[in-house]
Amino acid sequence: MACRTAIIIRDSIERCGKLWRQKIFQCILNMIGWRISGTPPNEKKYIIIVAPHTSNVDFILGIVAKFAIGLKVKYLGKEILFQAPWGWIFYQLGGYPVKRGKHYNQVDYIVKIINKESQFILGIAPEGTRSNTGQWKTGFYWIAKLAKIPIAMVSFDYAKKNITFSTPFYPTANMEEDISRMKSFYRNVKGMRQIN
Image 1 (tube, rainbow, N blue to C red):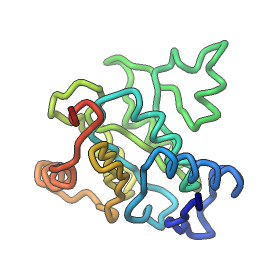
Image 2 (tube, one colour):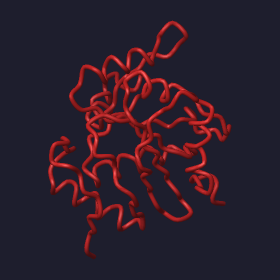
Image 3 (cartoon, rainbow, N blue to C red):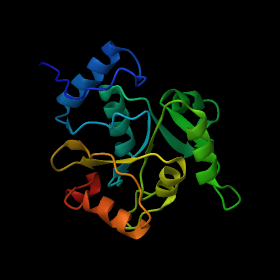
């Protein structure tokens, strides 16, 4: 079976791993019947919001897609995941540990990291939970706004087995309208627990 390469990443953007690893993960995606539509932004810094988030499988699919595309995408995880003995795995997969609680301003912390780095692509599930609440947390929006970087919507459609990238979107002065516009991108997308 031939493994297709449909995604082109600008040479100035640092890639994740070697080309041989990318080919292996492209083959894995093809073998499980998934394809990628659209193109990641040609930007060195942006936020990817992935929805709907209904299963732990989303994380595994996201890691496979990240390596198949060759994008150096970071993600945030509970601090406890990064402790011994298995913490090094989450670091190697691009994780950043975060402390949870009302005493920690995660938005400012992440904006500082983004501003310090020459390249930073952050993947976030806007629901913040696998429960189907229909509500989005707005941290990703404020990170993008304060860091002055775009947001790329990415859908994991389990019904069509398709991962789709939107064009980059810059937050405006109207958060409510922006969130509504972003949610419309996911209107007909089915998460893993929504296809039965």
